[in-house]
Length: 330
Image: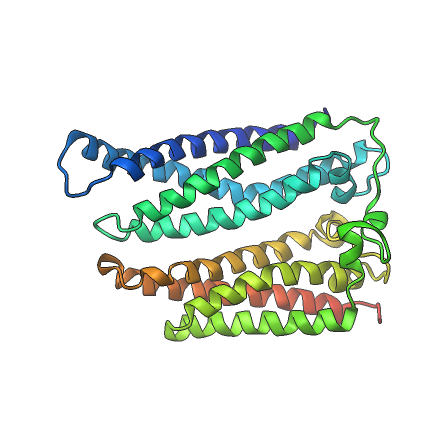
């Protein structure tokens, strides 16, 4: 195992978050079987008290799930100098069998955690716990993924040793290279740029319309969901070479380093949070007609639309600025 303070902090936080999520899922299983708001039984009263406390604690745990995506990449970048051949997080993640699977799982869990937090906040606006079954069903699907992530992450860090020889980002994200990274680097520059501009413009416009009029939440959510993978691919295929001013350097991780002013953190952060906000607005659409949420949900959707269009526009502006200000011309 590679010894690093960032690794210990991340693994410790993940264990706590997984434990809280697992405990909350256990309560959720009871709620789905025994919840009856019309009942005045001791069990029902106990469930009502416990679900409020557990939801609060789970909110912190799932917020950490979103943050842990960035902490994981930071930790991988921090240990890269201890691994032969690694220049950044790309090589460190390749050094273990579970590195990239954990990264993908963390991204998925961050999105699902954001959606659960959105549903939970909406549920707390209603006097009759209108979404309690919905949010606990989602939690029962999310909890195994969180536990799996914690286990695979621990296995990844425990398996790492300085003796491992790994690949550098130049090989992993090389044009014509094998693997998923090479496929992203091979995406055509012009077509990818146009597709990304169209998708991001649509997502921003739909979120802005939702914020201004309260309409089109489903469309905004769908476009936000599409914008996330499209924009991530564009960072590799289009944006990265302009940041590095090297036409062959497509690494999506080096931009997280000091040499590039840690640009990757605000770049990826605005994209992820903006996309989750848009998807959250769409996820609330089926509950607009719930009586106790008839005023709260439309207001939440408009706020989420406002967050989505600001953050997605900020991502697009940062990416466009780096391309326009770069000395590279392709």
